[in-house]
Length: 239
Image (cartoon, rainbow, N blue to C red; front, side, top):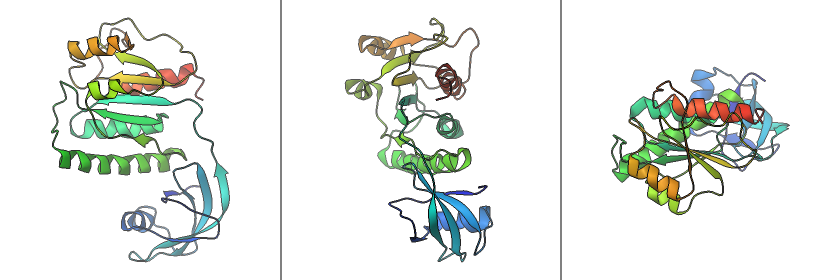
């Protein structure tokens, strides 16, 4: 089915769901769907429904869930992107493409070289903005599970209670990432513009991170995480 729409759950077959204003706008102004049109609605937790537009008015737009169309199990392999915060649209691009490339968890890190504001209100606005990007990316790529977007923290806080996963910390000039990696939970730690500070690298190594690089080419800060994610997914057979 061509059109996909994220609708926060819980949802059930036969339910009529009145859409939030942003979802209603997307339905009418972006997808340009009218009453009686069919689409696929998903709850971000692994289930999608064949649905029909019941009301296409901008203030009262609603869809009716007709039947379950697809179910995806939880991802078997957890793939964490631990990303040093980037400026402006560069971070938006990483969040979008990481979602499309199958990252299951996104950890924004206020690194020593992150040139962004640490003001709590700004951080919360960014989180809201990134959640919208994640939802849109899932609509585009067919992913039925939204990645988990964790609260921003510094690297020391993250490393004090990291996920149960092998950690690869990228740093220019380090030995290249292995051509293939054993299947299992993995965390990619990737720095901001200018990379990780030497003290952050030392901290990562003390906590068991394997410091690796991406070859001789110097990649932009927003390119490196996408190259690393694609390399990992390819090594896993795109599972």
